[in-house]
Image 1 (cartoon, helix red, strand yellow):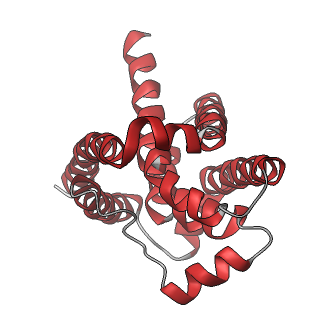
Image 2: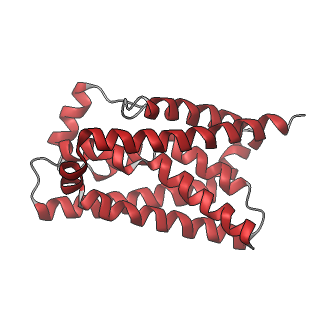
Length: 207
């Protein structure tokens, strides 16, 4: 039971780390700079709901999507591990999101009335790395009960985004840019370890 609990805890830490809500704080503040406190609350609520829905769909339909394209789960796990490793290396250098937007896209996002789904929920938080991780974990769940636990973990992790984004301005002021970079680097190191594990498990399956 302890080993099973540890495994589920590792999944929660992995998903939270890849979401990287602390690293998203500067972008969130930029995109919501002209919004009132009430508008910001609505954006946070929609963002959290969108992230949860995206990851739940990935967990439930990911295997079917892979099967439709004839992609082996071990090949996907290896590819996902490489993608996570690239994201982790980017985080270790505190360079911000690996998937970047152009200046035109940022200006357009700022002018939009609702930035909760795009670009906040996707690709900033629930990007390719997060979706790939959820699909890999979902494929490793053989029973309905274990998949149910995964869905519960996704909902809990998505819920943790709520206070972080809601208090982003205070966190930004308290922690500062340097503090955020330190936290992002620590999460990057954790993510790099998870990425290497994915790659090794994917490659080992072929031998």
